[in-house]
Length: 164
Image (cartoon, rainbow, N blue to C red; front, side, top):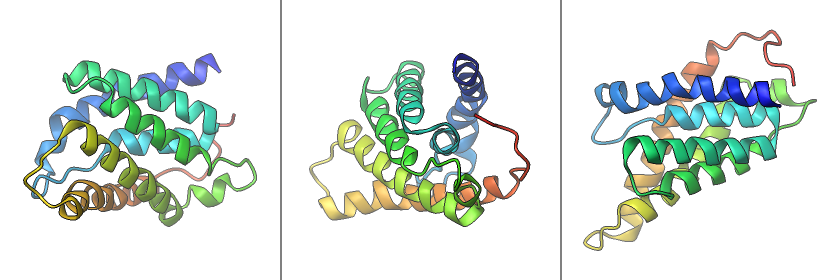
């Protein structure tokens, strides 16, 4: 368990660097994909719900501390996303859930949930409509992350790299 957690945290560091620095170059109308969430969903599917929940907490805490955002907003959203993605962790169906479209749908569900929770706590704007705000800050980043996740998981090797 410790080695899986250490490897997951080591994978997090370059993904965090990409998320903070390079994602601004593929931003479209202030909508960004969430590479950290894609990594979190991947590990949650591979290693289970409890592991995904704890890993989401750690990823969110590190993200909040490093980026200087509101402490707890990313932590709560990633914890909830890891919990939701952990529902799809099953040894017998893991190969089905890691197919590109299925993985993308799981990422879409987790990304929309995490984006809405994160936007509720970090960006409160009373001048816009709540439905428009949920659409702009929840659904659109979720769809962008969905497309990026399908592209990324398409290149995932189909052999058994990460056995639990």
